[in-house]
Amino acid sequence: MKSLKSNLIVLGSVGLLFLGACSQGDQASDPNNSPTSNPAASQTAPSPPNASPAATAKTEHTKTSQGGQVVESGAYYLEFLTQKQATGTHLDLYLKKGDKREAVSDAKVIAQVQLANGTQQNLELKYDAEGKHYYGIFPGTEAGQYPVKVIADIKGEKVDGRFTFNQ
Ligand SMILES: [Zn+2]
Image 1 (cartoon, rainbow, N blue to C red):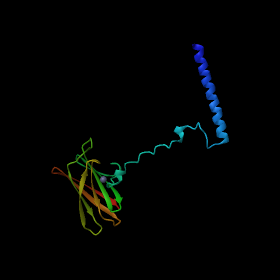
Image 2 (cartoon, helix red, strand yellow):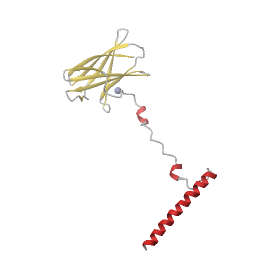
Image 3 (cartoon, rainbow, N blue to C red):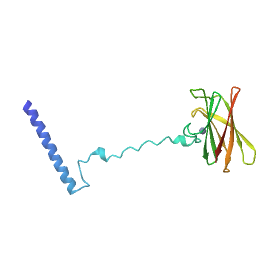
Image 4 (cartoon, rainbow, N blue to C red):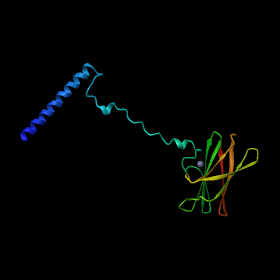
């Protein structure tokens, strides 16, 4: 029994050697007709999944809560970031409290933008629960530097910070 198994293995190996020799010969004579071509290699690789197309439909928020202008007022921490867009400037305000910098979600936030002609435009910033920040769109398109005062009313406790942005 043992010797029979060994013989079968040897026969199998010899068969593989012959197959290899045959395919090499075929490829050399006719490269378009290779019967032993690996079917896995000829399959097209699946295309990678598209990066979330839904995210582009929403208004663009700034990517991180870092690198903005920071004002600390009492226990509160205000960080202001802007992002220029086709229709104006997207304003982002991160309002955080305490050493743990916990996001404050229940404040009423107003941005008072000083315009070049001396008038002031008040924008109410809405809370974006997903991004944990307040945001609004300043609709002006005139280039310049705009001072802005942000006032946050946290259940009657008012904190404010002064910032500037360019567009
Ligand atoms: Zn935003």
